[in-house]
Length: 421
Image 1 (cartoon, rainbow, N blue to C red):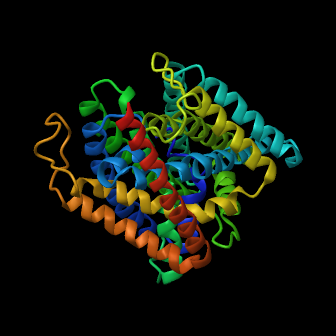
Image 2 (cartoon, rainbow, N blue to C red):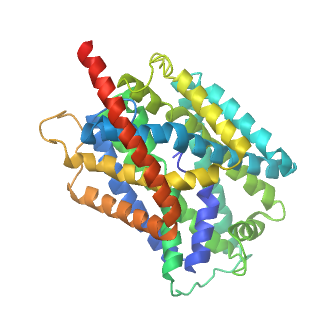
Image 3 (cartoon, one colour):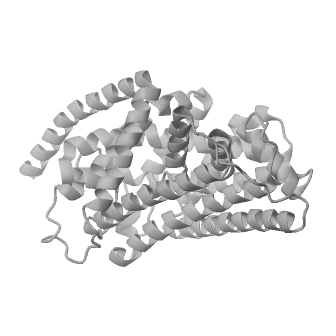
């Protein structure tokens, strides 16, 4: 939850209400997307307990489809996706921190880099320190949601804002497609917990609870925030999502709402940023263990739970992307590929003998229904990407294909080294 609930905690529900109209369609979409995401979390819970190793998605792809496929995902995540996501979250943290402090946006880049450096330093202290920060981040986010809901209910019951009557309206296909994509990424990040499965005590018990309950709690958060925005009844004429949220905040908290909401979003995004900095370097560790990267470059301190070179590499690449300022475009090319690999890794359950190996592993109930439902969601997302941004999706696929072809050589060299040893 500390990673998933980020900048979209306010903007995504607002965007849904503006795009879909009213409250019925957004609520239905949140519930449907939450259920489909929970189906994926069930699959990842089994995979994480069946293969409790550092690396998560990389490990699942390796077990299901071989090192070549895993390498294609791993290099993309390590060099592009994770640094790009880190840069985007750092800019989000900087943007709202400056807004909360009333400081000019021209300091956005240095503040973003400072956020990366500070949080990376905490991640380098080890998993124990990181767990404390993540726990407090999650508690703060729950407190923020509680504050929003209480303020909305109090305003409605006090008569300051009348309980609005929202009529259902026809939803256009483009608006629905955009809302589906937004909802998918509002839940994004739950799969990263698998990267830490080796460092979890009793993973067969803890990971299913963390993943499934975490997704359910996130879905509840988005439903409650959407309901609160309804109670605030901001003007329907708000031209942007930011204006929509600002109007709602003015009703809930008065004229100082802008800074208060900026503080809330800053806390939410910084928690997500730290979670990514803590978990993402585990992929380089898994690749090094398979001989696909030099072990000295991806040294892992198992005693303290820290990937020092991997964290430094991620923080350095992310800082460079912040300075360059083109990470949004770069991410756009590889997001469809990341979604594809997410579905493919879940499909590993089709390739293994679920009855014979690791009998202590969590088993997906009603299998294969949850996996089929999750793969259906992945296919829908890929179709929406292909239709909405065909050029970016195609170029990203070509780059990943080149990585897959190069992975053949890397996998062959790694296998040769293992035989010689």
